[in-house]
Amino acid sequence: MAEAAGATPLLPGLPDEITIGEILVRLPPKPLLRCRAVSPAWRRATSARDFLLSHHARQSALPLLYSHKDVADGGQSLDVTLFDHRAGVAAATDQFQRIARLKAVPLEGGIEDGSFTPLFYPVASCDGLLLLSIECDLCICNPATQQYAPLEQLDGFMTVGFYLHPPTGQYRLLLYHETDQRAVYVFSIGSNQPPRHIGRPDPLAGHGLLFRGSLHWHTGNWIMAFDTTTESFRQIRSPVAREDYGQLFAMGDMLGIFFLNDEKTAIDIWVMKDYQGEVWAFKCRVELPVAEIRDHCQNSSHIEEVMVVNGDGELLVLVGFEDWLFQVDSDGKLIASFHARGLPSYNIVHKQSLVQHTFFPTLKGYVINDSPFI
Image 1: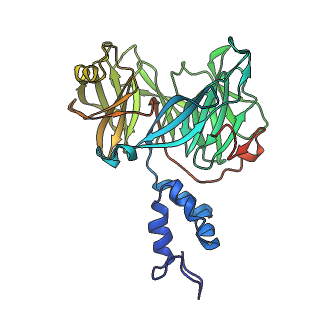
Image 2: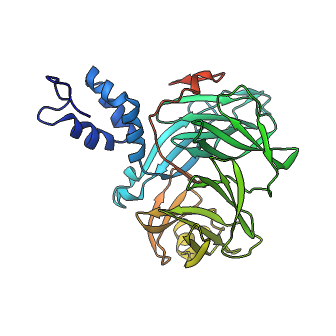
Image 3: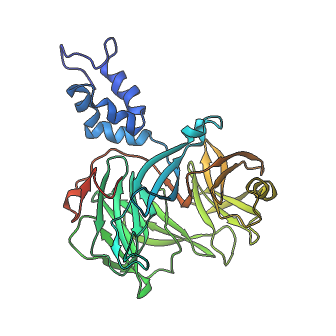
């Protein structure tokens, strides 16, 4: 990014290639937004689309936690938080980064006072965009830019995938209709066309993990993969034949899967050493420190949520129990415990982005920096 002849650099004594390409591009979204207030030149430099794409590429994909909190004017909000294990155990306040708080408009029909406030739930994440459900409806938002819009034309549909379609640049949803869970549809966000029927694969459980340009679901004996470019399905061998569903995760350039035992005391972890050849290897069994966790919480209930994430090349296990989050290593050792700001959400990882998307203003009900954000 060469400077124009005679132009004043953003930081005296440093070329803009360093200031922009090595310093500003590494900032988290909130501090970067504050930098735009320095001067018009700073605003232009940090608003350019190429810069924002580079900035997004530098962000880490972090586990997403959510919780519902009471708010002063009644009802509950959805608090969306990212957990960053790299901040260090001693810096617990930095490990939990709240990126959004949303509260829906009260609806008529409550039992006690004639109205109630429906709750948002996180569903899926893609390129900094967060898909939410509220009652039976879907909506989309970007927590970093505070943009929000409901998604219409989707009555009766349930989403199982959220992805970017590379040939068109459109963000799309993979859907089932509640009347036929074997019929799969594609919906382009921002389009005025209804969902398009594309096939009838085996029923898919949960939301697909995006890995190497395909969404993946574990379906028992197989892993179903959906190529987001050709929009076609294929089957991949599962490491073991099991009736219960495993949880898929990405560890660098390897696909992984883990199975939680019936007692919720241990997980078996497999990794795919050769994606093209579909070669799996057993990684390890992690005996969860259940007794230590129960003693910490003074509760003998079952563990509520387990999530496996990539911890800088090492496997990291997150265990949600009541309002606590426990960090466990691959040897089953309890590394840290936190009075958490929510539980892991269906293995969702979120990567923040300040990139502007043209589809938002085309959606009916679109708002920016306004309700339901609070």
